[in-house]
Amino acid sequence: MKPDISDMTIIIDTREQTPFSFSYPISRKTLIAGDYSILGFEDKIAIERKALGDLTSCVGKDRNRFIKQMEVLSFFHRKYLVIEANLNYILQGDFGYTKINPESVLGTICKIAIEYNIFPIFAGGHRSGAKITERLLIQYYKKYRGGKI
Picture 1 (cartoon, one colour):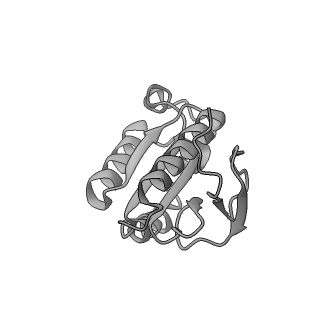
Picture 2 (tube, rainbow, N blue to C red):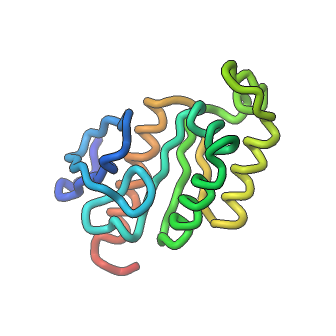
Picture 3 (cartoon, rainbow, N blue to C red):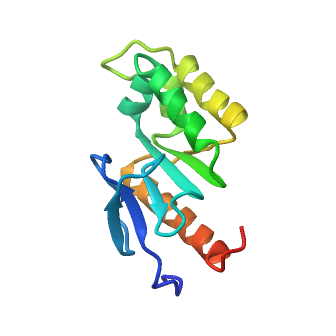
């Protein structure tokens, strides 16, 4: 059952190429950081989504850009990295198109968690990533919509 927060609007960054689908109203807007947020809380909560291919690129050739994005994200009240893969799959290292070491991927995820206080979530896939993202946004909105952050 959907919580009674009918006034919540989920913001999807305009640069997001394969956005999640949600059961709440959405709006497209360029966000400071992350791919998803809540209207009115764009400077408070941000969720960065990474498909596995994108994540391995961010650990490899795009690492500097990715770390800069995580630095910006670190200033948010709540910040999450939703990964569209499970940890076991990442550790198997069968990325196909790249020879990146799975330990490097895990190391980068742990670095982000420790240095930037960004909570990683291994969602398993796109659909489950959408579900966890929506629930994180719902819970945040329910707790802070009264303005007490």
